[in-house]
Length: 289
Image 1 (cartoon, helix red, strand yellow):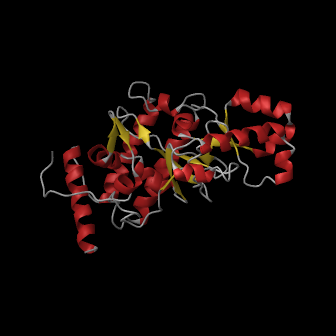
Image 2 (tube, rainbow, N blue to C red):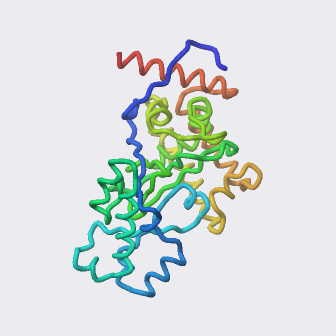
Image 3 (cartoon, one colour):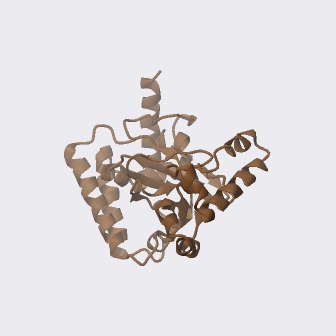
């Protein structure tokens, strides 16, 4: 509990502050027929090398947090003739069609008419920051990451296209995590991150100086560089409260201080942070009335 007026956090379709929009990932609804693990990918290519150009990396919360590979058949550019002459893909597409036809949802049944496509496509046209929709409450920070637009996203993640190191830094800070802890929904005890509730309402620093923005960007870059030193470790390993490397912990602590400075305040505890964030949120509501 924190002191202050009662406030209701409302759903927003776009951010209240001047930051890039966050979007949901795509829904495949494919019965697993468009997706591949490493072994299935290698077998498919070995059977027919023509399949390789239609295979792209698929990004989901579990794969990127655990440093695992997953692949997807990306068939938006395949011609009818080529599809018919690649039996290994043709059979999988037929299974997608059958899977969707068996659904009780009208929308899913309708999507059986286009079985080479995802049921709902939401793919960024630029590189992006990825945010897992569900993540452990035991981590001090939600592990965010930058990915190329060549990585196809699924519905277990949300992404922020065209975001930069400043956005990464603020969202990777204790200030944002305090907001998440108070506002975020839960799946069991895990955080269930929502763009409409959490991200779109999050009060960003108001008019930070160029120096403050640069400092946040510089430290964010250092955090990514430190993470790259541990290539064989997953983000689950790196952000575990016990196994988190000391140099990564210290870099995040520096980032926390830099972000606090951008807010123009010094905070002694999370209650003070949340009280201040609610004040910024309330001002934004009043300005839009």
